[in-house]
Image (cartoon, rainbow, N blue to C red):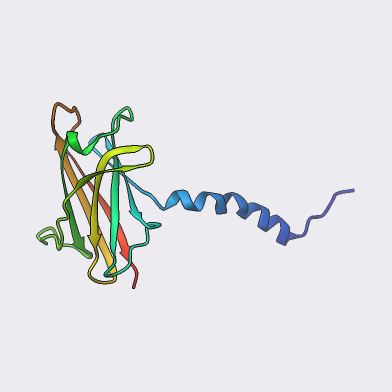
Length: 146
């Protein structure tokens, strides 16, 4: 005799793994020329118009070696979306070395988004102070709430 489980319970059980993986999707990972970067914006990757937020980038070269800001000539640019190739950035925040948990001396910046809508954060970098990684350019889309 087979046990019948109501479909609502079956459906609920299937959603449990999804619910536990959603928070890990908040961080945005991009790769360029064997450099990977993870963007995080405090708090909770949900910036709001007119409020200063801390954005940081955990950069790693091939093999997983962290790239501290002291080894990267990095620049951060912020563009409004949609973006044309000839568009100039609306902001060029100054990158500073920040410590966040296990990540030490990584590039971070304070950003205030002026309007609601979509923005592109572009971090580009070249090796500095004897570091060995290829030039890179990483682009992230950020949606700003009211």
